[in-house]
Image (cartoon, rainbow, N blue to C red):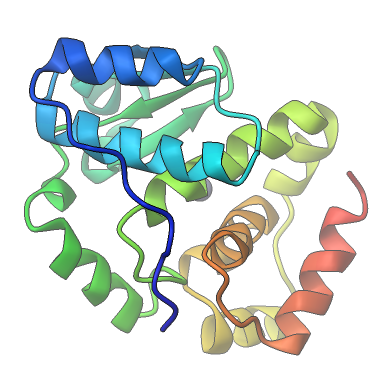
Length: 198
Ligand SMILES: [Zn+2]
């Protein structure tokens, strides 16, 4: 597996300091948990180092996962929220306990396509990016499912998350691309075929 060569930023020692680091990168943030703040800042730094456009705003808000998004979101660590264009972080998510081990397990279980620590933030960032590129196409693809044959291809070669719909597929492939993973030829072709609509 390719090691990430970009140097992670130095961890902040207070939430205020973590917010100021994000603000200096041009990202508006609402943080309330130091450990998770450092996690998000590291992901933002990776995006910045790739010279990609950073997300507008990242908000830590446990309640929105409990009430606002609906039941299944309680365990989600993060979610892109189309209504306000923010990326929300659920600091209560169990994932943040023992993050490295859990993320490796999710890769082994083929739930996610990479075992990178910043996987889920980069995944949500992909949603942010494509939604802002073309909302209409994004909303259309979100409702599109795969054929049985495509489903099998995705489950065998990518992740179960990616098989959910075309937007999840794009986000999972984007995360692979982001971390320089080798991508299966058929997966790549399918990806190119889907994003050409944008
Ligand atoms: Zn997603």
